[in-house]
Amino acid sequence: MSNPGHPLTRINRHWLYGALLAIVVIGLIVPIPLPLAVSPEATRFYEAIESAPKDKLVLVSTLWSASTQGENRPQTQVVLKHLMKRHIRFALIAFGDAQSTTLAQELAEEQARIYKYEYGKDWINLGFRQDIAGTLKGMVRDINETLKTDSVNRRPLAEYPVMAGVRNVKDLSVIAEFSASGNYKSWVGLVVGSTNAAFCYAPTSVMAPELYTYLDSGQIRGMLFGIKGAAEYEQLLGEKGFTTRAITPVSLALVLLFVLIGLGNYGMYATKKMEGNS
Image (tube, rainbow, N blue to C red; front, side, top):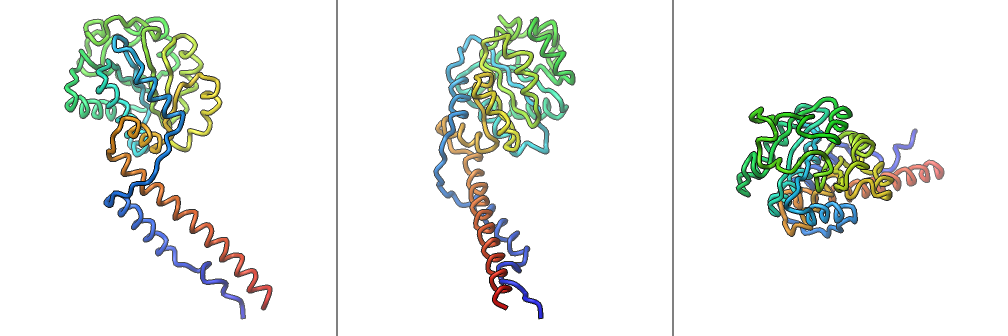
């Protein structure tokens, strides 16, 4: 008769899914204060915005859609909130996915109502551009000539007060990219060396590890590591919003994962030991 193995190797997977669901729901509903260490990369991102002069424009670039808004949306939201708290002018621009400009517009409008930001005076949407390389090369020379109009009213950029004093990327104080793609390569290769503006990047968690080389070289000033980076930034702002609450079930789910890995390995060890004794 074959050995059925240790009971730990025969746990019904539905119990595992149930445990994960319970952790996520409880973590979102019940406030569980877990310690959150702020990374140096998130701190540098925050400091770039915090030290940005109020008379210069910040460019907020987005390349994310509904599929990655679980991470990219809170990253974008918390940085827009910081910009508006400091009353710094900013411009949105989107690449790669047409959803980006719509989602970023909605997010900016939501925050603008809270902070009394006026479109055209305090912020502007430069719209969606498919050709990132050609657009960035043009922006290095002349932003108004390259982009021409905004995406909301289709009026010349020079007519908006928010664009006053902005000719090219040298007139920007910070470039903040929120992306689910490898867009940073275009920014680093075509723009970073042409301006003193701090380039900061907010990728999804799966992308973040490949960026440390650029962080070490200083080509990327700061980084938000997925939703964890957004929660760290929220902590630096002295706030405890949804992102801070959302990071709790993420952390608890990881604890559950490690526990299950440990139990699974022990179950396999115990099964082999039982087979050896049979």
